[in-house]
Length: 189
Length: 363
Image 1 (cartoon, rainbow over the protein chains, first blue to last red):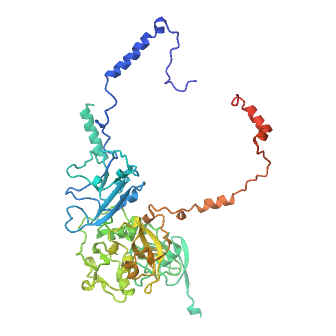
Image 2 (image 1 turned 45 degrees about the horizontal axis):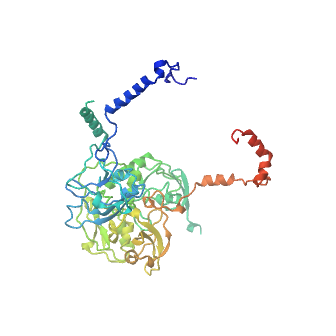
Image 3 (image 1 turned 30 degrees about the vertical axis):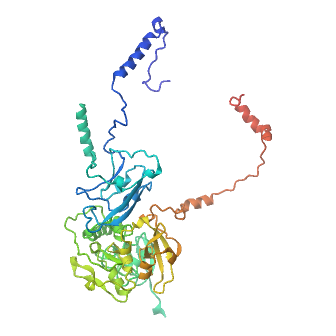
């Protein structure tokens, strides 16, 4: 019974004398191996080299600052209520006089903690944020941890460093399409 | 004797018929039927006399004025201040005209609202949030500068954010009716109207804290609770205590073991029926001061119920339970059966089965 016409016809004839020595078969097989030996590798040397994961990869959390270096987060709690794993917790503080250069609005997150053991990197916090404060970086993983004390990330690990600002390559679908075109041109395709 | 008898009238709201006493408002008749037909209210507050008729959130269409005069009313009317007549037919959620009008009302209420919900302490229990979410549109057409006010201090207990105010006058009526000495009201007119205490006099009478509960938006909030926690992260408990000034029935809002806020007990319409005194509200923030009755029942659709898991609130569908009950059959286990393995092995059934599957049991 033939279900599709894609099946390969196998040659079931008796092998002749030369074929019975298996030498031509061995040579073809070895030829394929040698060809791969010289072709481009599919693997990379991971810790030294890193693959580009795409502009929408969800990695390490970051609390963005605005152009003037003020924290955007106002501790509204929408990320925490959106979080399906209940990984986020925060304590709000009131901005005092003279702190206007640090916090954008009159309320700010005095503490902001993400429990990385709980986090499932779904990106719902990013989606819920009305102040465009929390993002999941596309270029950085949350590193491996070896003890439970290292798991809860506080503001010291989350808030953006003004000297090394985070920028996503593409924010919208249109941006991403443009970026792909550029990549294709760079690769000469 | 006949004259003293209260006359009952029949009204139809969204297809539901209800009998109410003559002189009730459309809002009260609708609330008698239930939340599925009750119009939203922003300024109307049942426990306070003279509220209502300001925000236009409760507009309804009267399709038939009464049995005697069946003509429809020419315009949408405010249901909280209009009395019912016999044979009145009212359309609320079934009328596209009303739904369209409410979109406009939301837009007007939000014109001067700062929309600072991420900062506002009322977020999560704000009536304006609910109202605009349920009846408004997701976008704004307003481009002009929003109205702002100079900050005014109302003492160390109550925080006033005049920018958030929608001028519902509820707090003014509270000051009039609940407290003995009115110290605040609305000053100026039109676009410049603002809630204010007379010559910045601090509010220091004993029931002034009820303004916080009464305020539908975040204009009057608890200063002792300011930025302590979002509403939906704290857990509400019903509690009471013996108080010589008020009824002492409250909600305690917990963060962990700590009471972070005390509010009056609100009913299903978000209205406090028994007002509480400032001692209960601001000074008794220890669990030991209160007799705890148990966790407050919060609607599953409210954000306050988020991340709180209560077995008693998860209900199984009534219909399925009824069907299961009606179709339940006791298992008839009277048939004799063999219990011991050697006996089973001797039985005809067993041997037949082994014979049928002998390929599998070959040794």
